[in-house]
Length: 347
Ligand code: NAD
Ligand code: TYD
View 1 (spheres, rainbow, N blue to C red):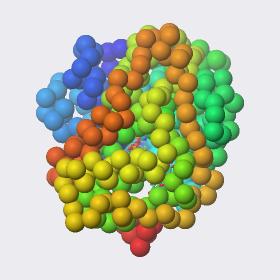
View 2: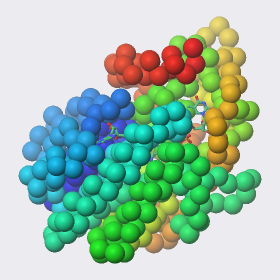
View 3: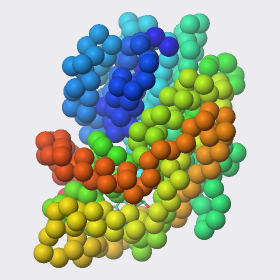
């Protein structure tokens, strides 16, 4: 891999991945970050990387649904590998406006696969970043494995499932070198505050209501974003083509417990007159709300030697501190689309 195209590199996980590659791996090639810069994409996530690595980091504003532009950039930069993050990623938005999810997540992935297939000679790897939500919902016991049947419940997870199937099909039919990862809920720095953890941190800081859907007993497995970046890189370097790897954080938590822990950390660091736990507000449940996600990651552990390093206890503290220490980033985010979305949802 010399010219690695990263799609969606200005989003939460993509920007953490690019930072990890430049700062903590021996990759010596070039990264071509292509991103449409939707409400979720933020150039400032990688401002320092762009300054530190001007020869090896390129940004191009490209919509993956724009096949012509995509192919032009692919050829100009002699792309020989792709790590594909670009997606519409928020379940609640997919319930209200599914159209962009179908376009970007399905058609956009198809466009990338077509271009890679057309240039298959000299193409090294298509890594597709996906979610455990494709497997649907678990009851009180059990774990998702790589062989769990797909049963997506939201327009978001259905669109990701569709893209996973396309990648697999191109690998089988056209022998496109490809790998897929399906991971659990990520958290950490640069997370857009429409998702549970950053939304709760920012609302709690402003002493605003902390919305918890339903009774708060839905369970997610939380994966620190840097652990995810490490897993992706391991798969890209040593994973077997045509294979899927599940990536989990070993941190199953009820939503209400996640919210309570964030309140406790903030109460300790920046005490207010009354505990922020009093701000917890149970709101109408999400339609089709998946009850529980949990991942069996023994395949990546046994075959590639990957394990999550971060405990939730330490990772959530680091995350809260990051939001406290990056007020400029927070203010910039809050001045844009975030505000109008929050107003529509909760006011
Ligand atoms: P994000 O919403 O923070 O970022 C998505 C990025 O993609 C943004 O920079 C956006 O501008 C870009 N983008 C959107 N549409 C585009 C288009 N048409 N063309 C080019 N760029 C476009 O998402 P994220 O949380 O960083 O997720 C990244 C990937 O990881 C997604 O594929 C998502 O499905 C997957 N994933 C996320 C999680 C999670 O917990 N966040 C968990 C499992 C899997
Ligand atoms: P989210 O961060 O949107 O991720 P996902 O839906 O992909 O798992 O939500 C995580 C969990 O938190 C999910 O069970 C829904 C719940 N949730 C709330 O209770 N309140 C909120 O304001 C949000 C955004 C999510």
